[in-house]
Amino acid sequence: MYFLSLAAPAAHGEAAGGAAFPPFDPWHFPSQLFWLAILFGALYLALSRFILPKLGGVIESREDTIADSLDEAARLNEQSKEAKQQQDLALAEARAKARETADKARAKVEAEIAAETAKVDGELAERLAEAESRIQTMRTEAMSNVEQIATNATQAMLGRLGIAVNEAEARQAVARNTQQEG
Amino acid sequence: MNLSFHQMADPMHQFEVQKLFDLQVAGFDLSFTNAAFYMLVSVALIIIFFGLAASRGKLIPSRSQSIAEIGYGFVANMVRSTAGEEGLKFFPFVFTLFFFVFFANMIGMVPYAFTTTSHLVVTGALALLVISIVIVYGLFKNGLKFFKLFAPSGAPFLIYFLLVPIEVVSFIARPITLALRLFANMLAGHIMLKLFATFAAQLFAAAIAGTALLGVVGVLAFTMGVALNALELLVAGLQAYIFAILTCVYLNDALHPSH
Image (cartoon, rainbow over all chains, first blue to last red; front, side):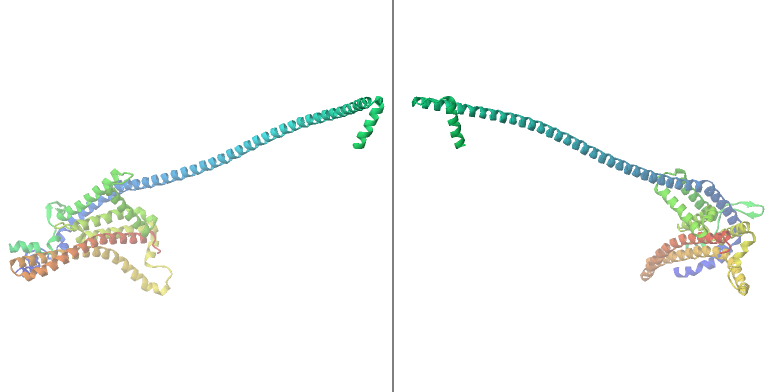
C-alpha cells in the first residue's frame, strides 16, 4: 500500500489542476524576476558600494601593516648590525690603544732601568777605579815603606853584628836582593 | 492520512512556488512568494555575514571575519586568474553572483527550505545578465573588434566558413548551458534527496507495520540518502563555483576578444 503511493505524486499534481512541473509553471515568472531583480540589485549595491571596499580596505591595511612591520624589523636589524660593527670597531681601537699604552709604558720603564743601570755601573766603575788607584798608591807606598823597613832592619841587624853600614849601602843591598827575588 | 502523505512524498512539491503576500502591479503578478522569501534570506545572510566582517574590520581578524576575507580573496583570485587584472572591475559583480548562488544552494540544503536556484527563471535571468554584460561591455570596450571572438586569427581562410558558425553557436549556447547546468543540478539533486528520504521513510513504516525485511532495504535507502546529502553539499558549492568561474571566463572574452 505504501509502495503504491510512490507512483501517486504525478497523478496528484495533475489532479490538482496545476502544471505537473512547478519550475515551468509560468504564473510565478514575473514575481520571480521582479524579486530577483530587486534582491540581486540590492545585494550588488550593498556589496559593491559599502561592504567590499571596506573589506578590501581592511585586508589591504593589514598587508600594509605587515609590510611596514617587516620593513621596521629589517631596519632595526640593520641598525643592530651597524651598532655591532661600531662596537667591534671601538673594541679593536681600544685594544690597540691599550696595547700601545702598555708598550709605551714598558719602553719607558725599560729605558729608565737601562739609564739607572748605566748610571750605577758608571758610578761603580768610577769607584772601582778610584779604589784601584788608591790600592795602587797604597801598595807603592807600602812597598816603598817595606824597602825602608828592610833597609832599616838590615842596618840595625848589621849594627848588632858590629858592621856599620850607611843607609845608602843598605838600601842598595836590599834593592839588589828584592830585584833578584822579584 | 494517505492524502497528506502523498503531498509529503511528492518530490516536486518542494519546487512549488506559493504566494505569501499578494501583489499585483500593472497586470503582473508580483506576489511575494516562498521563492522570494528564501532569496531574501540568502541576500540578508550575505549582507549580515560580510557586513559584520567589514564593519568590524579588525587588524587581527576573528574567525568569521577570517572566513569572510578568505571568501573575498577566493573570488578576487578567481577573477584575477581567469580575466586578468582588468577583470577586477567586475569583481563586485562576480562576488555578488558567486555568493548569491552559493548561499541559495546551501540554504536549499536545509530540509524544507526552498531552493531559489532550482528554478530555470532565476538561473536563466542570471545567465542572461552575465551574457548581456559580456556583450554590452565587449562592444563598448572593443567596438567591432569584439566580433573577432567569432573568428580567431591564424586559421586558413576557408576554415572560417566552418569556424565562424561554430563559434557563434557556441557563444549562443553559453547562457543556455550556464542556466541549465545550475538549474538541472539543483533540481535533480533535490529530487533525488527527496526520493531517497521518502523511500526510506516508507520502507521503515512498512517494516514497523510488519514486513521486517523491508526495514533492511530501508536502511540501504537511508544510507544512500545520507551519501547523497554529502554529494549534494559538494554539488551546491561546486555549481556556485562553476557559475562564477564561467562568468569570469566569458568576461575575459569581453575584455580580450582576440583570444
